[in-house]
Each structure stands twice: as C-alpha cells, then as structure tokens.
View 1 (cartoon, rainbow, N blue to C red):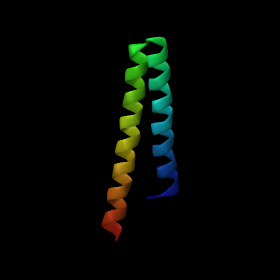
View 2: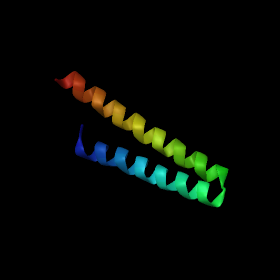
View 3: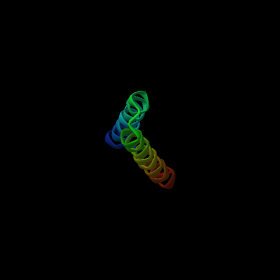
Length: 57
C-alpha cells in the first residue's frame, strides 16, 4: 500500500469516527451519518490498496 493512500485512508477513518462520536454526543443524526460514511470511504480506500498490493506480489 502506498504511503500517501494509506495515510488518506487512515485520516478518513479517524475523521469519520470523530464526526460520528460528536454527532451522537450532540444528538445530530446527520453528522453521525456523515461520520459513518467517511469511515466507509476510508475502509474502501484501504481495501482497494490492499487488493493492489496483493496483485503485485
């Protein structure tokens, strides 16, 4: 996995988790959903990079 893509995936996951947590704390369903969506996007990016790495080996 390339370093920049891995860091982008991790950043999206962390940002999403934080947004989800804050959304739950303040009772904002929209923010909670956005946080979950960002986490899924980060997970997808990470999975894509892992698949690329597997094909290279």
